[in-house]
Image (cartoon, rainbow, N blue to C red):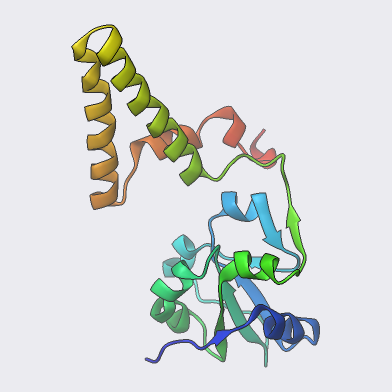
Length: 177
């Protein structure tokens, strides 16, 4: 199967405005909740194995993520999930915003889970280093533990810290409160 062609934000906006195409956001729900392109359908990449994409007859699909890297990396998977003409939004939502096109931001939505993991891991590693330097050397084990956890997450695709943060009260959606 061939690569999906890329489309510029301006050309994509024209196709969406005329009803030729539907914009599909493949980012995870937490990312979509924080900022989205008005009218984009949320269809997380993680849900693609369980469903085919259906957007209506004679409509084209334009897939987007944050920067375009996820859509590029999963081009084949996206093409297989959609039966019809499809494109990748060049540069993702970042390029859309940079071109002066409208996005809807919800600053009350929690930070994306990936950023929460980065902040938490960074703070724990820094705390382990500082406590190990100024309190007792055994505190360096905290930094080692977090580093080992991040390595495991990268290799296995499963992150215990992300799962723990996901159940925190600030990450619960309004529908589950």
